[in-house]
Length: 259
Image (cartoon, rainbow, N blue to C red; front, side):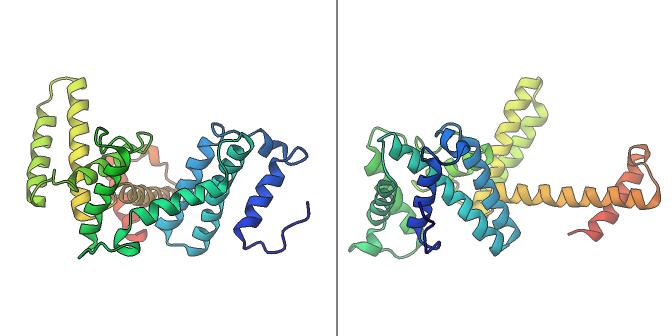
């Protein structure tokens, strides 16, 4: 096979992946299955999120390409197994987008984004059937914080929500109290879970993406602690031998140096 002339075309990627999977293609690509690629797909998703968090458009472009490669690779594996083709994937999402946007492609009128979400949920209910839970198609493999925020967002669309954030804050205080009163390790674990669940609700009401917020907090901690280690190296100090007060003083110094 000769190389595609226009590498900016989607068909070029499909052809390259097919060539890699051919009998005389790449041994690594040929041995992959839907199952073996699970971790690769997840890793590529996280790398896209990292690029978004960093606000690096060049990196985002690169990582989206890696993610798209995973999609096409799965489609090629399915094609070889006679399951479906990449055209079926594209047709499926196009059909879904048109069906779920009757206010764009049909005659339905909406006044704002909130009404779009209400209609969206009604259309999804129609698709999944009346006897199926509206939470059933939320992937349970999602990170727990994201899963919590997603299921709370979905039930809020049908009115199962606090009237205002004040009620959620009161619930948070209640959960803190229950956590303090828990008298066993098992009970503390349950109450801590309830506390995190309520925090996810607070974040949702404030429009804060919990996973992104925690990733950013982790990033700040990483860079500040690395700064503390560098300060110790510059001053000939052993971090582990410092008192807690001395370590805290270093932390405050690092906070001023690293945003």
